[in-house]
Image 1 (cartoon, one colour):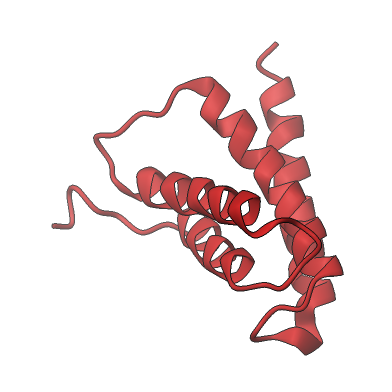
Image 2: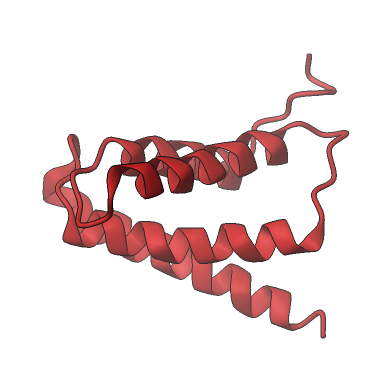
Length: 107
C-alpha cells in the first residue's frame, strides 16, 4: 500500500478543502458547489495515488478551484472552524495563486 497510496500535504489539503466546501452554506447554487467540491476531492485523491499522472489542464483547473474555494469559504458559513474561516480562505487563496504562478513558469 505504501507504493501506491502516498499521502502528501497538498493532496490532504485538497481533499479536506473539498469536504469543507461541500458542507459550507454559501452564495453558490448547491449543484455547482457539489461539482466544485468533487473536482477538489478527485484532484486531491489523484495526487496521492502514485502511478496516476494528471494532464496539465487539470492542475490549472485545480489551482483555480482553490481560489474559488477561498471565496466560497470566506463569504459562506462553514459547518466547522467558522472562527478560522478567514485564515483557511487566505491559505487556500495563496495555495491556488502559488500554484498558478508556478504553472506560468512552464511557458
